[in-house]
Image (cartoon, rainbow, N blue to C red; front, top):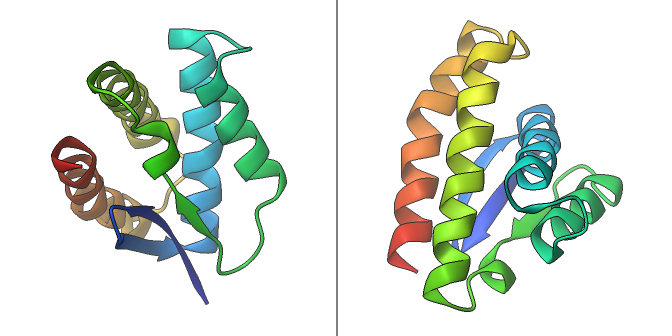
Length: 111
């Protein structure tokens, strides 16, 4: 079973493990960039804590304004970079990340 991130009705699918790892990195990146108590950081921590197989993480709630979109993209970019260099993903996982991260970034940008 797969899990995914949804933006504006579009889902970017990945393995459960890949989405969990992304949520961990997103929570850490958000805490580093916008603060540990920020709404975005809390969102990612809560999504990670509630994560279950087949989960779809709906990101639309984080896209309420142009400023919110800019913040989310900064957090997303930092988390993606951290995942690329962390050693968490296998070669297959890195191929998924290289294909899926630009797709997800485009969905966020266009939302």
